[in-house]
Length: 116
Image (cartoon, rainbow, N blue to C red; front, side, top):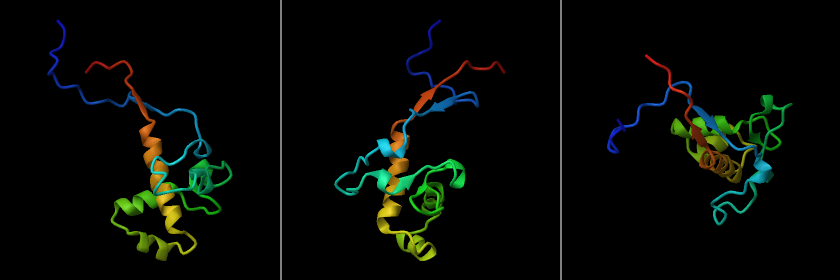
């Protein structure tokens, strides 16, 4: 019997894969071009020799992830600029834009469900 169209989808299990297309920050331009005129590659880089290849603010060892976690914890731009004086407002905005662009291209692929 086919599932009801109103039936709720089961929660994704650990075998769900989030696949992102092969592309680096140099291939991505911010979707908010009028607010963030620079290309992300001018601000964000991923180098295997820096922070194990995690995306960082170019020329620093400050990972994009750190900026996002601080913002999610309530930090303001001013807080980040005080804690990391070598960053600029554009660096912080580029980190957020990079994350948004990365999520925009995610593709969720469900694998075979396991039996309970």
